[in-house]
Length: 187
Image (cartoon, rainbow, N blue to C red):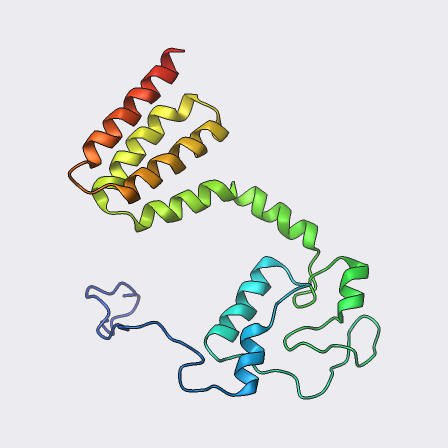
């Protein structure tokens, strides 16, 4: 990147790319690593769960040496790192043990941001090659009149067909699916 003020866009690709994924137990086969890998994160919201799982995955998780003080009951009952509430207080108050937010309000925020199925589909579309992505988007726009449940099922079927087919029979499989979509529109 240039040192000019406000230039935040990189024009080149990443210089050093990882050839293999990071494995936290590749060189370390200690009991601590095995315990951390088998640790199941519960009692927290989805965002906090992803954060803690990331820390475990990349060996950034630091377990507690001694229990910490709970901010709810003021006792030394917090046994998990990065938590501020003990499991009993979090369950009683129905809040996340890490960020102390109401679990119901977090689920409502997710619903307000958009349907989770559509978010998953959009993330899958980003990983597809350009040709397949445009074809699916064209079919998706044709299906706008149909119900959302039918649309999701049909798109998942199309994605499975795309994964199983090669580039040669790609056009043939989609043309049959486009015909079935046009038949649905006629009915």
